[in-house]
Length: 158
Ligand SMILES: CC(C)(COP(=O)(O)OP(=O)(O)OC[C@H]1O[C@@H](n2cnc3c(N)ncnc32)[C@H](O)[C@@H]1OP(=O)(O)O)[C@@H](O)C(=O)NCCC(=O)NCCS
Image 1 (cartoon, rainbow, N blue to C red):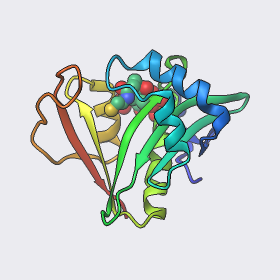
Image 2: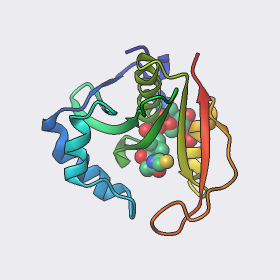
Image 3: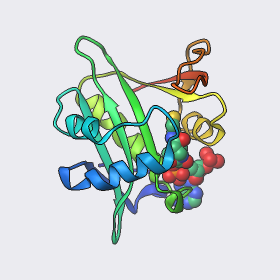
């Protein structure tokens, strides 16, 4: 997959069943609510309407993950989830995952990638904005299970 120079060492591949333990462990360690369960991951790995991506580099097989959803009849794909291992953050893993998610969306003939982000998630918001995502929607009140609000961001894919 094509990457910017800063992320050249990071590779992104499609997740496999053998990634399940790492996917669940990262999900558990990262999020307090709206968690993707093991059964959901297993289903999404095998689904035509989802693409689960995994980032790796050199000797590390699993550094982070992103999940993209596609909907029949919609030209906008949805970046449903993204996380990198805490010790791998700030090294381009998130960037590489987003670039790969955009590529996956384009392969599915989508012309936009859309996402929701907690309004207080400053580092994720900075990353999305740096990569060209723009806020497109009024705040979604109590969007998350814990009552937090969300911004909606979108990027037109060219
Ligand atoms: C959001 C998240 C996925 C970003 O992942 P990441 O691997 O840190 O992403 P990157 O390294 O590509 O970018 C993060 C920062 O590192 C910088 N960076 C990118 N490549 C770099 C490199 N090669 N060397 C040093 N820094 C780099 C980026 O400029 C960016 O800086 P910024 O915060 O000022 O924009 C990660 O912080 C995370 O897992 N957070 C918890 C889960 C979460 O909040 N997910 C989003 C839910 S919507």
